[in-house]
Image: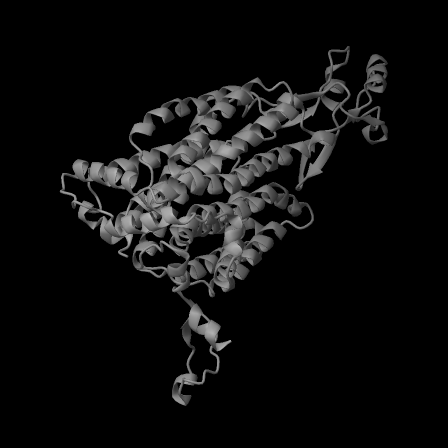
Length: 560
């Protein structure tokens, strides 16, 4: 049976149909960039200290009532304590002067019983200042990000299976609707608990939308255009949205107005329904040949080319056979059915986990790169532009496996070297961190395409969804990974670097997919070559035995 790419070659690769699909799918991903990382601004912690109520205090005592603490070698006002107000009020009334008549270190302290005063120099408000997520409640601030990423995790898991079962297009638009509606609903949250629930549901649609659009474009587009879309198209669609986030946050400095502004672009989503078709590959895998032919014929009309009288003749015979026998349905457990599938899935999940925890840890760390969080966020986003361009060049000219290994080693090396940089060269540390983010972003774009190329059509979205689900475990952990710096400043970087190096060695055992058509069936996937260590084979000569041997999985099974 001819593969899909050969059957639809008469359409060409870059006609009007492909251009519409390419740019509309990129447009659908654009809001994901500022939606997924809005947590950087919505949950940021403004400077704060205990609120001092309006009482009769002299100016000296009013300035001294908040104790000083040393944080990272600098003196700052205490965030969670003050000198007892009744004691300070009595001393003020008696005319004592702090620091001259009274030793402040001898005074008893108390917590912020009257609440907190938050600086508005950078933000008018965040959910931290709205719901007082500081001091004893400070754990809720990183946990809010974790709740969002848990939603992304579950969304990735279920959307992949729903997409393989009910189609790419319906799930794409359903997840876009979830994303828009619940971003808007968060504005009306009366408490942190309600906000977290809505934030979780919002997360269900965030990455699911991205994955559905990615798989849909990968299956519709062919050849070099597919490589361009999967490496640079979806990536730049995301990063341009990401680069717009600091602009939105700068203009709308209250968290409610920011979320309102971020939800407005979602109103344009429904108009894309008439421009984005269902995946013909998916329709063929379901035996719906007539619907697939109808889409391809419309594409031929738009591209002004003549379609054959029967486009999917081989598939029609296969569809007739399918109708005679019950069709097998695939789910996440199908990824563990054979040794080949199991090995590929486990290795890919490890690589995805390492890249995801690294990406979000470095992205959430942007406020520490520069005194201005808006500039920090823009720098972190801007470094992804050359990363996606590099991923496109790598995927166009270099083998997938070798590229992934080199990129992961680059990430590990750059993050390891940060601890060796003297404190006087802080800009070099920032450059190494951005080099790590460059490598992680390039690797993520590569792994999206690599994963889609390794799995057959019947499992492609489930596999991509499962890998991104595992990766979201990493993103859930990332807010707390940054807290390891309390024990050792460079421990987060060492952890991320180690994960990257281990993943690089695991990638050695993945099959190569460069320059090969997408597999349509599990049997075609099993024919892919993978690297195995040299072993003694009865049919190999002594001269040949001195070299590593590349065997098909089926040959290896026969030997063992």
